[in-house]
Image (cartoon, rainbow, N blue to C red; front, side, top):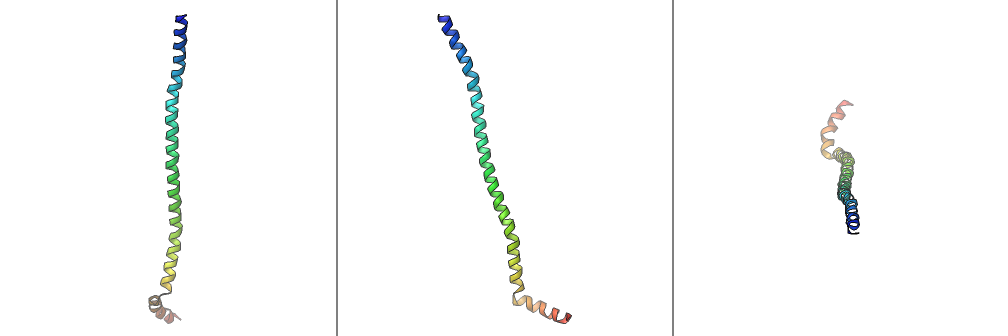
Length: 86
């Protein structure tokens, strides 16, 4: 009877070992996947910010050009040259 109980315990321990060994890498893999998804989320939000900045640059440039075209200095420099051509 003791031998049977011993063998039964040994068998149960052997069955448990592979599960424990598989659980550790699985938990590590899940933690790694979670960390990667967090980093990817940060990267995506950074890319969105960059795209917004890229889109705002032409708008700011156009505003600057229009402001320059409306200045007195522009009209002073360009006005006489345009009048001569007519």
